[in-house]
Image (tube, rainbow, N blue to C red; front, side, top):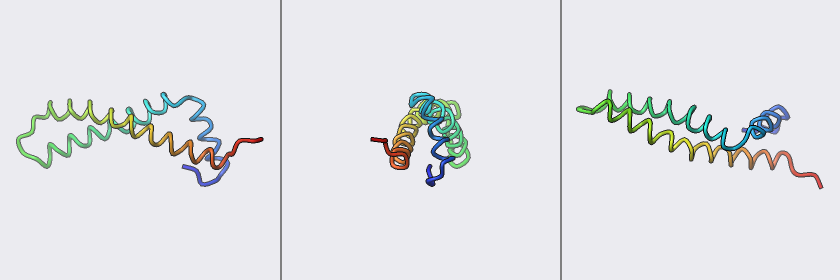
Length: 91
């Protein structure tokens, strides 16, 4: 996320000030989990035969947002690692 630019560091500082849980919920579950789940279910309907659309959409809207929690936590961890490397604590 950081290319050692001050703008990137400032942007992450604003994001992290809002909190880890909010980031994971919004970026992981809402912005990654739901769209990915919908894309997956449509893809499965188009590429496989005899699928129940209700089952696929329900499954996707449960599992992919849960996966988004893991994805959001991983992105948070990696961003914090880069932020801390670019912005070491002052002694």
